[in-house]
Length: 507
Image (cartoon, rainbow, N blue to C red; front, side, top):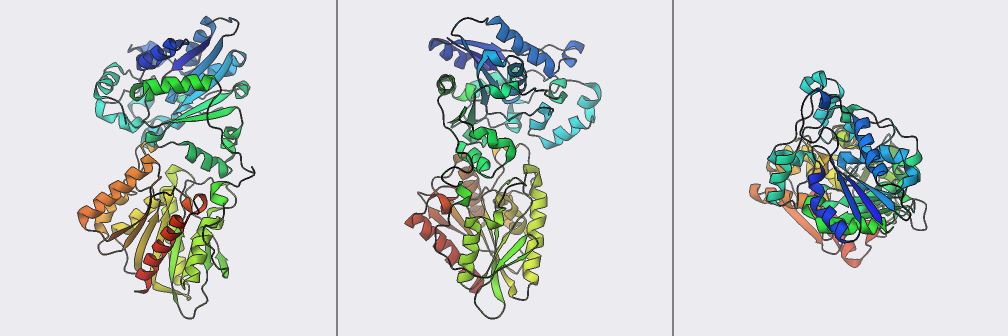
């Protein structure tokens, strides 16, 4: 028999698992949902003393209560913060655990407190610095009001009655549970794992595969054959929004099913290193610092197209984005059409880096405009994927020399699992200042739902203010289609977008 120990995230307890646990039991499994110490709604000094170690002991007690019956397999399920005590317990009872399930959670590391996974950056800084009421007095963190759960994760799919109950039964989170570092010996690394991602909260198997392909060291373990993945089309609390589907996924995970990631260096290169979908000419390239210029065979100052990569991209990723085939392909294509194509590396290595990345882009643009081979009054900016948020700076008050702004499969608003985010980087709010600036958006039909929503938000805002937005549709294409979907439709979408951008530069 499989026994599931279900450990919920911040502010919550066993009550969130009721429907999922009942379905697991109906399928013949055992299900034990925990309410961790201090989250029963109690108050006082005893709660203030609760820390991560207390919660690890809670999970250990549950494991030990199950005994050591022959054929019994224990699956630990950690949602959100719950993965921290789950890993701490698995590290001490690795021989007893058949599988660990990361349910829409991060990947805690030895020596790192759960605070690092809190999505609200300002709250992280307050608590880490010992400032404010919570840091000074160790008072528990109050649970969210009904309309504030979104700050902790997408509530997509949760019925109103379930959200009301979630709010009514929520309890303050003991502060020390977030501040005490998780300590691991490495024993838990021997236990098979499954990640259950919630796409409406901004996570997907495709995104994880992409980051593994970048070569990010901390994520290479995810390509181990003992690691599997599932994806649910819902928000951060699937036990409330899709309890039946979650129960099915947990049962399949316990059986060893799930998607396996492709490790870097496999027979097929990762998506971002596959060939560009068009045959483009070889042209001279000049490198200055973090900026590359692809030069056309033409006299006189030429218009320029600056291609801004997405991200976040790990700082250690090699090759760096300016050498990725898609970016170099676009730059060579532009040069072949008589414009200077520009690629660059910017510092978007983490979600907190958008300000730094925007400064890098602005500096690169000034370097390009100062080059005597470039017509400084005819420049276009072309953003990709997560780089799309940087476009807000240029939409808000476009300079006269910016003749066109393009965005291909862009992310145009922060995703739900990013938490509170700098309002500066919201293109939908900035587009009202774009005036007559031509904007070309390449929209893919097979986009991840959570990204597609941000594009539609931007297009709705652009229509409301009368912005000059042209949409190039590729109905059967995916995110990063230039290397994933080398079809006639995809090629025509790239050609059409380039014709439009160059037309605005030369017209």
